[in-house]
Each structure stands twice: as structure tokens, then as C-alpha cells.
Length: 140
Image 1: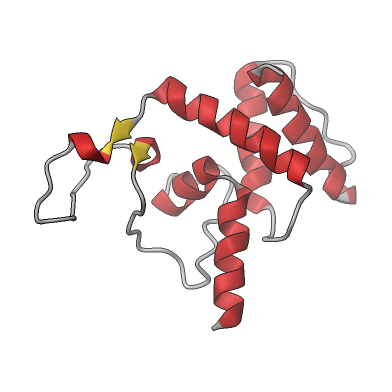
Image 2: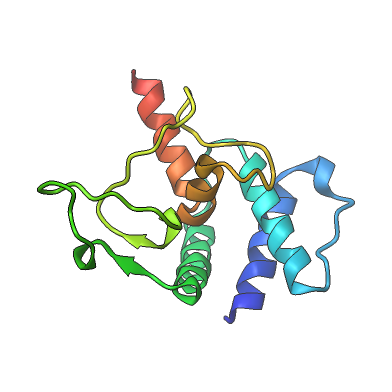
């Protein structure tokens, strides 16, 4: 499956989840498809989805991130032992953890195309992150 096929699959699966999306058609051009996919990911409530979706989503996002370029934290200079300050696209970092001023629900931003860091992180991490954060908050 190539990136276009993955993107169309992901869009269609998300459209099929909600009856009110039945009138939405997948756009023909790549940039409009990317925007629609991000919209659908941004507004989706935290819940499980089939593993096949996650597998395809992960392949799609990994390829997209590789195209942007990955910065390995080991190539950066720490400001103190084990702590790094990064000024750049946080979605390109290869590291174990990031610190972010998240919203109170910890489930990311639900505003389509919003340029906040929460939206960027959740868009590139995949929908598992929103669900995992939701589960953590439910336990508290």
C-alpha cells in the first residue's frame, strides 16, 4: 500500500464511523486529502479502533515523519544531564518522551487545523495517543 492508498483508507474508515459524514467525499487532490484526514483525526473522540487501522495509520505517519526528517535526541546537546531543550518541529524528534503544556483532559486539541502544539503532537503520534491519555485520565 502506498501513501495515497493509506491516506484514502484512513479517511474512508473515519468517515464510515459517523453517520453525519455520509455526504463527505474524499477529495481528489493530495493536499485536500491530507487536510481532511487531519480534520477527522482531530475531532475524533478517544475510543478504540480496529488494529488494521492502527497498522495502516502508523505506516502512513511514519512515512510522513521520515519525509519531514527525523532529529535524534542523541545528536543534540543536553542543557543538563538527561534534559534537552528543542526549538523546532517537535513531531520530528526521536526521543523517549516530551513535555508539553497539555489541556486539562490530556486528550489533545479537537479543533481541526489548529496550529497549537497539542494538535501537532496528537496528529503525528496517531490516535492511540488520545485514547491512551483518555484511559490515564479515567483512572485518576
